[in-house]
Amino acid sequence: MFSTIFFLSAAIQVTQITFSVPQEKMLPVPEPDKIIAKLNGKDIKAKEVEKFLWDWFGNQTLQVLIGAAMIEDAAKEAGITVEHEEVVAQVEQQIGHLRARVPPGKTLEEQLRLQGTSYTRYYIQARAELLGRKIVLKSFNPEDLRQLSQIIIRPKGKEDKDKEEAKLRAQQAYNQIKGGESWQNAVMTFTDDPTTKANAGRLGWVSLVELPEETREQVRQLKQGEICGPFDTQYGFVIFRVDAIGPPTESELEVAKNRFISRRLMQLYREINEKAKVENLLLPSGDKVDKGKHP
Image (cartoon, rainbow, N blue to C red; front, side, top):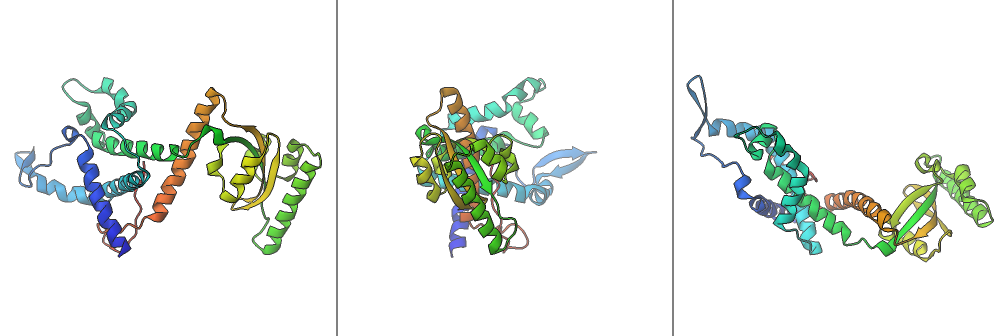
């Protein structure tokens, strides 16, 4: 019952997305018997092409529209909207540079179709991207930013004793730092994360909302230079140090915000996919579960 309701909801939303694009940018759908081309005097009718369109591009198009519909539903739930003018401006940023390459007598839309894409596809994807950005920015607060460094200690194997050994090593690292060991030395001695080991475990600016709840409040209470942990996470046992407390400087803030958006968008798409159950009834195996394709 749930999957049926969701599929109907997605189908309704897809219809809304289709009609929300600028209609003047759409290629008119020809009548089935309309002659759309001639080859050596022989007619090629629209209905001869349509069956191949479904076979070649039907599922791909469906996935894009379902993905966009998922974002639309999430935006509606969050009370987020975008204006047509915002979407047009976003599309112009993406394809405006192509105008100079359009041959005389052709439009940008025609040129895009010759390249295997279309203005309306850019429009739908830009709209979904703008909605997604606005959704994640609802939880962005410069005062919640912390400049963090970390030490990660991972179990060497999958048995309980491996995890217990990692936990003991993490506690040892914590105790040594509290006892006066420099953070730099502790990172070089203990961390199992090669990505951050070379730069003393620095993560840069991270929002508190990005941290697990059991970690978030402890980090919030820390002053600059203080540490907390070790926390048992999916990545291993983690010790955090607060290097600075937000808000950052104006130049740092823009970088921090863009990185926040990038990380949170990926999380948003994962959450939407996990929550949704979509039955792709276009494919021969009707019981196949497909997720939408996000921008």
